[in-house]
Structure formats: structure tokens, C-alpha cells
Image (cartoon, rainbow over all chains, first blue to last red; front, side):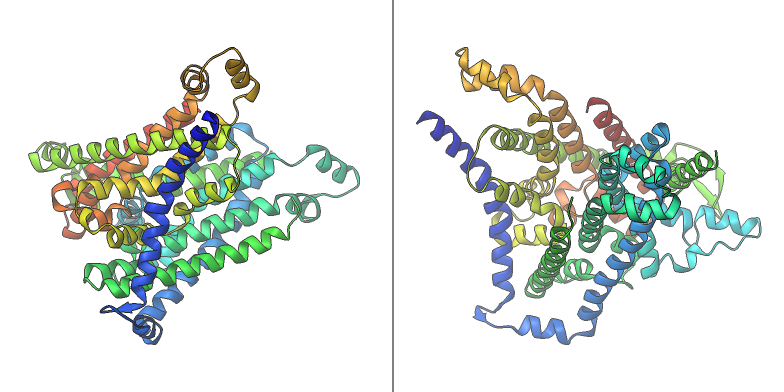
Amino acid sequence: MKHELEKYGLLFLIGIVPVLFFLYPIFLMMKMSVYNEGVFSLSNYVTFFSSKTFTIGLFNSFFISTISVIIISLMGLMVVMSVREYGSAKRVVKLISSLPMVFSSYIFCIALIYAYGRTGIITHLFAKIGVNFPIHEFLYTKYGIIFANSVFYLPFFIIPLFSSFEEIDPNLEEAAESLGSHGFHKFRRVIFPQVLHGFITGMLVSFLLIFNQISIVLAIGTGKTYTLTYLLFSQYERVRIGMANTIATVSLVSTFIVAFMFQRILGGIRR
Amino acid sequence: MRNRIFSAFIVLFLSILIILPLSITFLLSVVPAWSEAIPNEFGLIWWKEILKPIFVKAISNTFIVAGLSSICIVVYGVMGSYLFSYYDFSGKDFLFSMILSPTYVSCTVVSLGLIVAYVPLRNTLWMMILGNFVIVSPFVMKYVHSSMSKISKDLVEASYSLGSSKVNTFIKIILPLSKHGILAGIILSIGMCMSALSIMLMLYNAKWITIPIYIYLENTTGTLGIAGVFSTILIIVTLLTVYLVDYVS
């Protein structure tokens, strides 16, 4: 009896937190998005989907996240494949990879601008030696945001992929080699199917983090390139709380749909 | 041999991509004047500047907000990990996923939700702590849980069968054996709370401006040197965090 009381007491204390501070605020926010001056109305959604600014923001969010994830997954696979057999290189990559986990993406972007921006140190140094460094020409565009995302969120893809590679049975690789499978054939038929789960999980994590981030768009987008989270923040700053709630709801629903789709794909992959 | 060289090239490439921009931030903090991106001189003017009361306040605010948030986060993380590691109940996986779900939702969405739901707390220190708590606690709970769940259940059962109470077993067996995970969680929590901008962006108030908010404001108004100093402080905190988390876990 005492054991049960302790269990349910602790369960209540732990369970009440996400209900009070996550589910309830989100429910309230979604509810307020369909009310206008106390009356049920979908006017905010009509405004959202008929406005060019908001639809471009939605498109940018998906476009930037998708392209960034494609780049990250190709780069990540290359990095992990090339260092997985060398212990010290793997350790260095893992250590560098853990930096962005606790590092502010905003400061990272400021650092990128100081390095590669129009008046950036590296841009100037290259100009002085006669090399036209092209990064500053697209750093402040959506491609610059993709570049920053690809660098900053690469570790979030690499880390689950490393775990998947560590789970591969080395005997299987040896067996494949003894049967004459080498190089790309071995990778495609033996290695990749075994890490596919980690690969897709890494893609999902990176996509959701990029889709929902604001700091990089805030630092590099400079108001010209905007995503859903940026629009949410700007609507909040202009005290348009109804529209901010609507954008937040669209963002949440989009996140849910993407996560659901990835989960379906993951469900179809045998581990 | 060719593979080894390629592997070294990849490490170098990653280092340049991630570490080089960060070292330029440090350069900004020690160069008082620039001429076409070339330093005219080196000096600690910007570092002396942050000894002014307004900047000292930002630094102390950051430590207060991060410290108070981390206390709540770690206590919740340890309690939650204990529940998930030593009790069985229906809906366990669902509750764990629910606790982890703020990780994959935008910080701005979470912030807006908190502002809408808890209007009296708006623009207070408590709202800033609450924001940090909701966003950072899933990360810490994951860390502590992975450490606590590795403790042998037999050891805990043996303690109970020898007449030790649950509290005593928790303090004398579970806490010492999961200390590395808890310590890593504390460091991670302080590091994340100190450098959090996305969470604070909508929740901060003028009395409680923290270093990341100051960097954001300075960057938009233009004093790069001060932003450079604050960024360097955060980089040092981050590097220490990464090193300590790696060391203790």
C-alpha cells in the first residue's frame, strides 16, 4: 500500500509538469488561434493562407529544412564512414560534434558573419591575396541559412549515426568481403541497410531542429528571409497575439505531420 | 594510407568549419580598432568595458537565471529518472515521450504557450526560469536516466531486503552510483541555460537581461567588441561544459 502510494505520488509529481507547462499552454494557444475577440472564427487561418508573407514563410521553413537535411545527411555519412575505423579521429569528431549541442546557434551565426560576411575577416583576407571568396555573396540569403544550418546541425545527425555504425557486426562485413563484396557494393548491400534506422532517425532529428529554430534565421536572414518561427516572433513583437498563436499552431501541426511521416518510414525498416 | 589521409582531411575540414568562426569571435574581443578587417592593434579595452555595472549585472543575471533554472531542472531530472528506472506503470513510454517532446517543438512556440497560459508571470524572473525548465529538462532527464537505468536492479533489491528504506537506498546506493550522469546533467543544464537565446527571446524582461540577450541587442545596435567579449565568455563556458560532460561521463 505504501509502495503504491509512493509510486503514484511520484508519478503525479512528474506527470503533472508536462501537462501544466507544455500540453495546457499549447492547448490554450491552439484554442486562442480559432477565437477572434471572444468569438469562434477562422479568420486568422484565412489571413495566414491568403497572405503571401505567411505562405512564403511556410514554404521557406520546409525548403530550408529539407535542403539542409539532404546536405547534412550526405556530409554526415561521409564524415562517419571516413573516420569510423580510426579511434583518435573518431574521438576528435565526436568532441567537435558535441560543441553545437550546448552552444548558442545565434553566437555561432554571428561568428560565421564575422568570418565569412561582407566585411568578414576571412573574406577580406582572401580578397587581399586576390581570391574572390564567394560565401559572402549568399551568406545573407536563404542559401546562407542553409549553409549555417548544415554546419551547426551536422553533429545532431552524426551522433545517432555513429551509434548505428558501432552496432554493425564486424563479422558480417568480413563475410561480405570474403564473398567478393568491396567498396560501394559492400556499402550499398551490407553496411547501409544496417545503419538505415540511425540514418533516418538522424534525418528526423535534424529536420525537426532546423524547422523549429529561430536564432539562425534571426542572425543571418536579417528580416529578408523569414521562416514560420521568425514570423511568429515578429507577430508577437507587434503584439498580434492571435496571429502569433495561428503561426504557432501551423508550425506545431507541420512538425507533427513530418514526425508522423518519418515514424511510418522508421516503422517499415527492420532494425 | 589513402583512407588515413582522407580521415585526417575530414577532421581538419570539420575543425575549420566549426572552430574557426568561434576563434574569430575571440579576436573581436581583443581588437579595439579594425582597418578593413585587419586588426590595427590588440588590447583589452572591451574586456575592461564589461566591468561597468551594467555589464556586470548582465553576467550576474545570467548566473542567477541559469543557477535557479538548473536547480529545478536537476531535481526534476533526478526524480523523473528514478521513477522511470525503478517503477513500472501503464503508459510509462507515453509519459517519457511526453516529457521529451518539448525538445522537438520550437522554443518560440513553447515560449508563446507559456506567455498565453501564465499571464501573471509574464516579464518576470519566474517566467524565464520556467522557459529554461521546460526546454532543458528533457535533455537532462535523458542523461540522468541513461545513467540511473544502468544500475543493477539486484543491488537495489539487496538493499531493500537488508531492511534499508527507500529513501536510504536512494541516498546511499542510487545517487552515488549515478553521480556521473547527474553531474553531467548539472553541467549540461548550466551550459544550456547560460547560452539559451531562443528561449529567452520572448520571455526576458528589461530587469533580467542575460548575456545571450545582451549579445542579441548589442549585435542589432552595433557594439561588436562587447558582443565579442560576451560571446567569448559563453564559448569558454561551452567548451568547459563539453569537456566536463565528456570527462565525468
